[in-house]
Length: 153
Length: 256
Image 1 (cartoon, chains in turn green, red):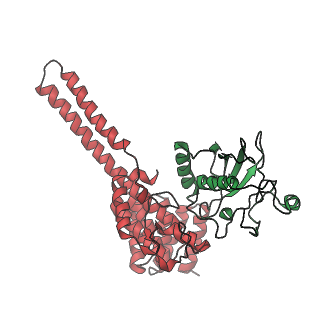
Image 2 (tube, one colour):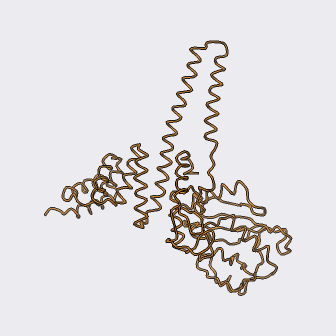
Image 3 (cartoon, rainbow over the protein chains, first blue to last red):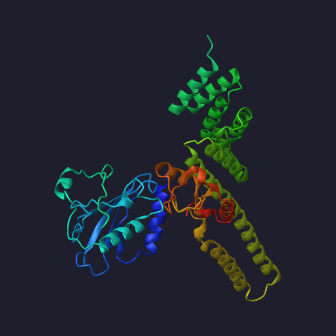
């Protein structure tokens, strides 16, 4: 009900300025936005590259978490990370609809969390079982249940 | 065999659903003639009359329903809408706030919509007072201009009037220019000015309706993520008063 109003306000704030390495690509409605993120330190895995995130909001946002994934576009690939599948699906506690998400989070804070998730990573690899996961995952993220078995990443 | 009151009401409901307000109103009236002790007949007729812009009659029906059932959420809600339409924003606000309290107490699913109406009424009340203020100041400016024309018919009079207009114009622009909402009045979930702030045992305040929505999904304080249940919430009366005072002077902030 208030999701449009809340997103409207996030948009105003975004237009006033975003943290370094985060850019708004498209926000034409209150269903789907696209953001670009860069890793700002010299992590060789991501140095000089830009990645694109797609946010999907339900009418229950921000009570309900947005669906967030990486997407491919011109000059935009899916970053290598042990918690990011090659189809762009991100395994991040913050984005799970269980207790990970909190309605005080925003598009900006989610971008920053994903940014720091990349910054801290040194492994040039995909999650276990990436091939099978990509084969059986439809485009809807809602029903995926991740098992957070590795807290070292 | 003549129809029973309940049957007449049901016929009215069918008409209402089909958009036949005239027909619906007629059936509800017949139901009331048969049985004038059923509050639902009055609230149903109030709603259809609201749709027909018969605001005075809406008020009559709502007051009758409130006599029959003092905790009638619908009656207070429609009453507030009618009072607003008739240009009584203060009365409309107290009716709508009463509806909000009842909705919270009765755990009504329409509480979100009623909370939104409360804020709308606050905005309307501000708009009306702004309008009055502007008219008053405009009159004042005009009178000053005339005074100068009549009593100071010297060279430079037109320039003086121009300066006067500029001064008034500037004051007006300044008033409209300062459109900032202090962060402490803004709910961290909706990003809007709060209507009914509650404080958690960790010291954070949120607007009640959305926080309850969140607690249904997760029993945590959204900011600290520590365990939290509805029982741990207390009204934050000082913050509520601050929000009320701010909206009274800055009704635009409802849409901000």
